[in-house]
Image (cartoon, rainbow over all chains, first blue to last red; front, side, top):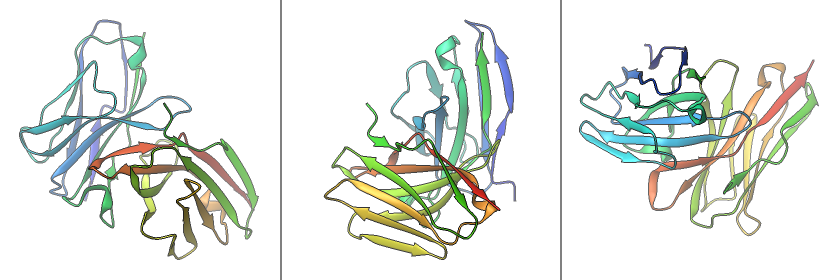
Length: 116
Length: 113
């Protein structure tokens, strides 16, 4: 059981480039989330989705786009990479009970992204 | 605006002793609190949670205490073990949005053998 899988693990981008961070889960979870963690800071919610075709903004959505065409996949798109987007990105999934279930969120191992 | 604060970046304790990790919050609309543990190069893993209708929740060696009037919660680990060495994040969920959590910056716990 793989859980939440994120690819790539590391990436260096140039300013202005675009890329898609991939996230897939095999637990048939309805809810999926994208967070970023800057050095010395807590995780901040970028976007989340409560099911295929439904996405919502979190605390820091600017500069990102998401889509949810299937239950399993929740890719995060950076269109015009900026140095401020240098961060570690975590994808997570949960059941419909969300953060208040007995297993609130399962996280992937993260993608470390540097923009130079 | 840091709504969830963990003011101690690091904590070092001896194996077998108690570890106490603290967390303060400012938003009175938080009504559910969680602790996550994170090892290097891995994602956070859920540890324990507490609803605002309770003041204590216990799971094995881990106990979370909530003081609503002080907007403060703490995680107690007894006895501490070297495998507990990790970064611990406090998180809070808003009353009106089950999916929006705010995280503290984390406390790095080192348990010395």
